[in-house]
Length: 339
Image (tube, rainbow, N blue to C red; front, top):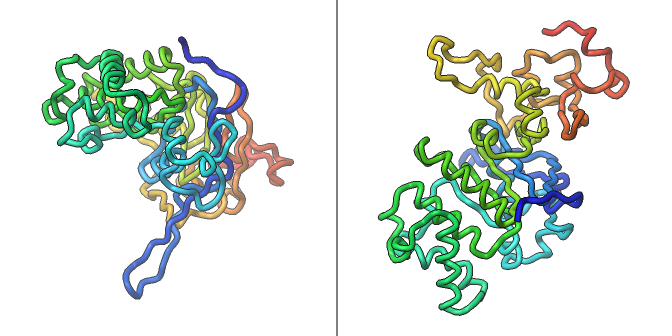
């Protein structure tokens, strides 16, 4: 069965916000860290949405909220139109499963591979011992694990094999959505493409829907059908993959694409034009959060927050360069001299 797409979102987030209170010691002043800020997101069946951005932009916090591992400070996450808090933890785990970055730390070193993969079946009371063994062997075959490793332990496997165990465990109960948090970053480059190709094949075979969270643009270019770019807890651009890589709109998206290193050593390290200021989620700037690093900022960017503007062909870009002068209440940006 191939991945299919329908109009109704299989998952959606509305106004998703997550803040943390930071303490600077016993007498220190408390600060608020704004990890995710009023984020909206929708995901349709059969899609592979790649979420990219720098470390600290809120990608992992977002994934934990989508998995139901953390409650949002504000906003709601819905699966099939139903808020996750109404679904229940056990039912939610049947619908949404994670694949973590480091397979070694996420696998119990004292359990056999067969026991690790079959654990979700046992927790949900699915089948008897014999049927579970059959399910495990079938899933091991799907993910490219030889049957001889079933009685082995994680320490006896390579990094790529351990990630295949993680994938088999995530898929054994046939979830609808799989959230992959840096699924290949802990693997050798030679193994990464094998895992990505396998994820694509499994998506088509099992009609899966993926969210792939990564800092590696090559991963999402290879795997994703759509790209969402996060910056300081917001999605500042979303577009189909081909359109995004061919015509990025947001200045931050363009800087990310320029950051990709090439094998040509004569080109040196790319100049991104982002300056030395690193975004601080505990002290987000007013107006457009990106304006302190943006070469295309103009009058008002430091005061007026941008609104999402629909992109031609789908998606959106959250940048005042693409708002109409009437909507922004300012002179035409094209007529305003860049600083």
